[in-house]
Length: 233
Image (cartoon, rainbow, N blue to C red):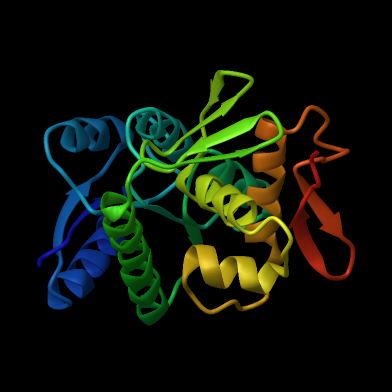
């Protein structure tokens, strides 16, 4: 099966290089050179993954990502010269699945894209096979069929990664997970010690599900070890 990538990059040289690499790898690549063009292309076609630069003309990458996340859970990999923790946090908080800093290795970029598509395909097939199932803890109800979460009957929007992190803990309420284990199980990839990715997703998830994110009850930290689901009667 040929996978299709939406490549959103305003630098023509980088766009041509990335498109050439993934075309050789057997992907179909559709380029867009600004945020507005990318939105139009996305609305009129279907894709398996988006490669997204942040610094775009007309509509920047963050705004594009926010709009996309309102309607789709497609894997999004940010590629940007902005390598600070703030930009990583913003990108991942808005729903990006991964982040790679420019200049990047084409080998690493290719590996990350393939891993993201593999994860998305795996989760899609797994969920399609499951019957409707509801996981509940405290005031939370997680619907595995509809990928939805409710707290006290009010829907809470989660990114794909946030959903699967929460599902991991609710499905195994007594287990403690290290950051490496969370990354391995949710991202289905080797953990290279980049704690920022886990920290950002955990912080954003807590902001959505906890009454007091600074005093989490649902996902608790065991300092120096990892995380576990809180205990509810």
